[in-house]
Image 1 (tube, rainbow, N blue to C red):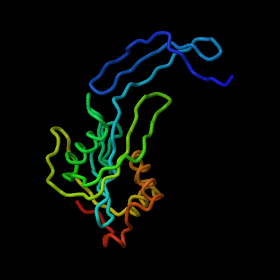
Image 2 (image 1 turned 180 degrees about the vertical axis):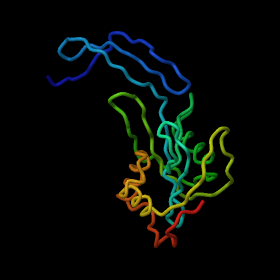
Image 3 (image 1 turned 90 degrees about the vertical axis):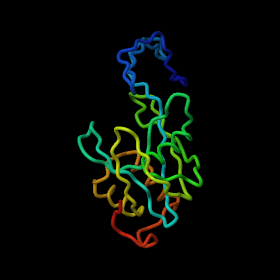
Length: 192
């Protein structure tokens, strides 16, 4: 059996929220039997890997209610209806950090939860950053933190950093040598 495609027979909306929708589909399996598949529909997101000219990374510190603690993350946000992921990346970078990118290049796409969600996250690398001010977004409380890549990687290694989008972005930057070290940045401690 070379084709493992499951074919939808019918679909039921189980929950329709402002951000997420939960579906239960009845599917036909490759061997002809039927099964149920429950999954979350997500509009998709864009994440930005902002690298300053001196090599430091621009991250945001914010409280994340589902895990009950503050996290340190690369700026990111959901794709609004009718918006491209690139437009989302431009908007979120400015809203969350006050920076605008001189260059915003698509890097890669991930599907973080393929077992139970259709979420897609597009990664962009932002360089040539210019700080224009922090317009913010109503109801969102974030602080900008500038760190060298090696500090973010240290936090991953120590277990302080558990936010997967940021972990993956930091590893991707490290593998490509696209962000400076603390020595290159002339700094070893966070700044806001």
